[in-house]
Image (tube, rainbow, N blue to C red; front, side, top):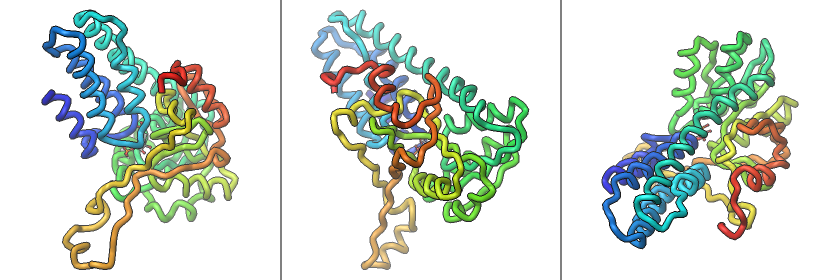
Length: 307
Ligand code: RI2
């Protein structure tokens, strides 16, 4: 349990972050827990697996990759402890392998839509979006990137480091400069924490501003999202919860303590309606947002009764 608690804490504090990385970390944590779980009765096995699943899912409420990964990784049907343990190990390994393969596929598929000479704007730090950008560059396309800082946690600094390692010409901009720079941009490429059944995107706070500015300037807005980032529970009407993070991410608590009339609002994500999204690049191909429902039904394979 200690190891799972450590992983859960790292996800909560964002030492492990990014919708894809937290999904893989959670799948790995369940696998390792199941591998070492010392119980004899199946009832206890079920309870313990359910408890660690709940713990991992509770760490960050928005990224649907997390409950999807936990559900896919902890799949078992056997009523025998040893067999169920093996099933979980295999399911979790399969999920992690498929997640890595999905990133590669998204890169290859998405790069076909990037042209020589393109200026690409990206937001926050998405491994799926970066897979498209770096693949296009490695294919020899002459591209430039505008990367937002992404306050308050400044994940944009991870993005510029990654792009720099590839030798991609990159400009760092502050979040409020998005509209100012949009005229230089050909395409916006962002990642996803969740995609609802109606094609709406949930991604790092500020994403919807990029989408609005791109729409106004008639620039293309691409989302890079593995199929496990689509949200089955939105089909049955559950809303996606937006994570509200601590005030200290935004302002020094000592300064805030001197301002009794001030509070801090720090939502980590926002919604971008489907009408601002030109395409979603997934590991099963490029889809319009209106096809989100189909992706959920065909590729996540869950029946409504399971939800
Ligand atoms: P990949 C991140 O969330 C960002 O919002 C990013 O766009 C999204 O996850 C997807 O990232 P956070 O963990 O899975 O920084 O594409 O809050 O890496």
